[in-house]
Length: 157
Image 1: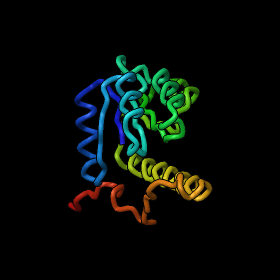
Image 2: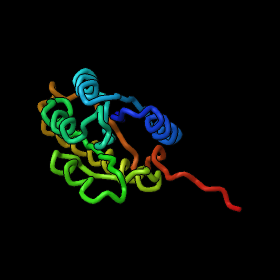
Image 3: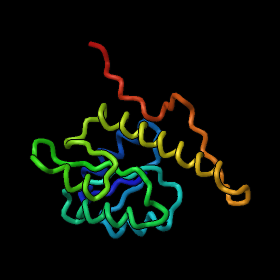
Image 4: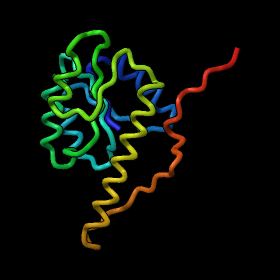
């Protein structure tokens, strides 16, 4: 997965949570780096982008990603400030798949990532079945219960 954010503290916090759940996390600190990264890599399944980060220009970056052949159908989860009226609309209009309020609650983000990763894997498998045999690439099998995205367990008092 790819995190697009210009705040290293946010990148660190998100990466810490996501890696604890078995996800391989990459990051880009601005929109141009994100698009370049996606053009060069084929192993990214989902993008999480801070739409209000000044160096990222979230809506513009989302539009650029949607125009990138390798990433045009990739799920994009937009992070928008909670409590700010209208903060999610520009991301949705630009093509974000979903939106999560910040500060990010892992109990909200993790199930959302699981859903979009499952849907993305299903779409790739359907496309592979429809493609001629020589065009088929490697398939990614995903178990029904993917343990990578379980919500954090809180200790009992």
